[in-house]
Length: 307
Image (cartoon, rainbow, N blue to C red; front, side, top):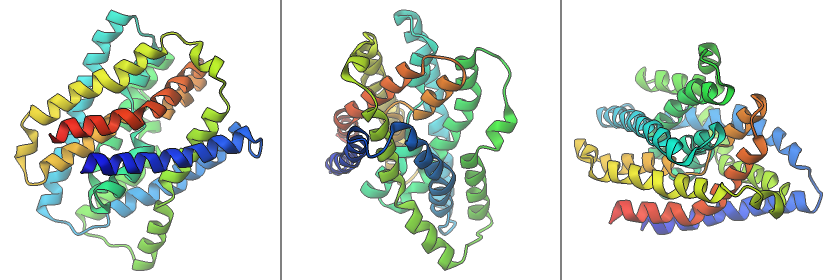
């Protein structure tokens, strides 16, 4: 049932992405103008979503669920780091390919998907995966792409999403409730995350030519490893690792972790590749192709997890 709802939700998001694609192809907007929408999504909408997710009643079951979600997120990333290191040696993967395989677009996609197919009360658990990934992205991911060993801890801690996650957890633990009018306002803003994220993706894809996409011969193997091999191994770990039985609702919490893992390659990898002088065009192509492919692979992985 959830896999069918997921197909419906992803299809809706892809139709929105197609709208962004059309905006660029008809020259109503330029692809680079998506940066404005990205700023709105990152600094306004996402913080509202995260803070709003933690504005729920503190209970022992939710606290334990968060602990499980964090543990699963850490375990998943450890496995991915080891797995990609092994695959990197076998397939001679470069830094952009490795980063694209490890880091997913969970920040943009997982929250609207979880809200639609499970309900907003489950969104709080997706924040665990997002926070773990953000920390690793700005430590391991940055070092891999810019080939340096220095960790910019300040940049990690001052990341807007990390700040709002810390605030959200603080509000949750201290049982601090924002005024109802503020919560309602944030809820109104939060529903825009999925559509705006997909419009941005559509605009970026609209700036590419098919010749440009298929010029990269390794895109097929990278997509296969990212969207099928790695997700399937994580699926087996979550389904048969015994973690789901640790508490009530554990299977659903691990499903959220799985959903976050099987989303397309992170758009942040493209941005970091551009900053650190790597092949940002190749990174954007990987992001585009995995985004298109996920409409097929995500429902299949969820179905395999549920059977």
